[in-house]
Length: 187
Image 1: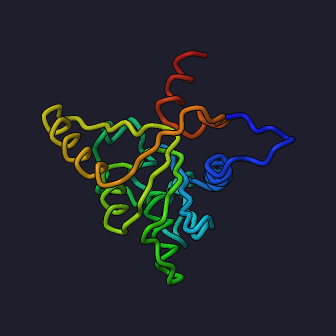
Image 2: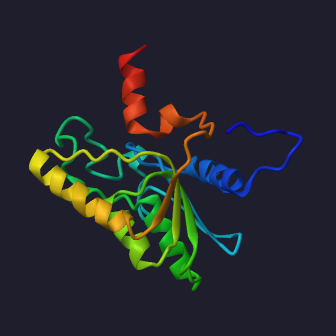
């Protein structure tokens, strides 16, 4: 959605706009994602994906998996060695660190939550998820992928999920791995 300079943004546009600003700090070599947790129409926590605080950033070679793209690890593998913390996880952890309850809150995230983050959002009692870009799992085993999709759908059914489709994301090709790959193959 394009912003009208003569009108204030709708709440969803406002919070997703904050998520886009937070995403600029993401330091992962894969998807660059940010999340904003909103409760009672107030931002209570933000997070972006990257390494734990005080560690060398991915972009500086801090994560073994991220520093070996296309080399040592096939797509969909090596996540057990990845030290990056996802945006949704970071937002939940920031709220926890400062003693802020997220029960009943909404989350605005620049990418649909992955399998692990979806479980954590349900467990934290987040009510509604607004996301901008779809998450595309990269499992190697097709049978496992089908089973995982069924389980993912089961988890996501516990959340009210809204895919925001008509939102202008000028940095989408920088942030989303699949769009970046398309851009690199189409000069």
